[in-house]
Length: 207
Image (cartoon, rainbow, N blue to C red; front, side):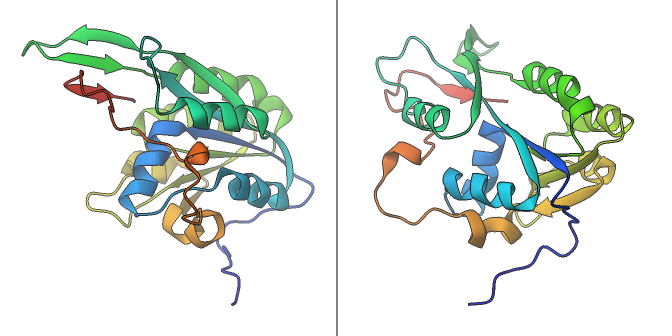
């Protein structure tokens, strides 16, 4: 089998590279493309592209659940080369009286990327959220190339047009899928599950 080339994304062995993964956004994109990510393969692939300095993974956790379906993934990533950035979600009641949970990680990701920018040559942002456009612009002004990883192969596309246009390079997750997808071996410890298993919340939003 011929290995798929990502010819339009220039990587250099000597460049210092870091990953910034918006966990819920990446999960939603992969789910829309109908595959599960093998995070060990993803880390290995990134390390082959340059001098991988750090791989950050951002997610919010519902702390008061007896069992959090995302906890096994968080623990696995923490022990397997990823820098985990988590915080508790916030619960509120919306105007229709529905309980909702929000877990925004934008500030944490933005601070980390800006702090590390002076020590990097290339950052890969795994998110399609248009709120990151200004962050990408700021990092570029420090001389860092930014590759955004999301997808336009879904309806609607998962990546905001303004973010895609701002990035130096755009890598469609679908083009990366055969290199990082997880074999369906029943190992739930490395699979992100965002469904609300206990059923007591009307809506859960991670953004």
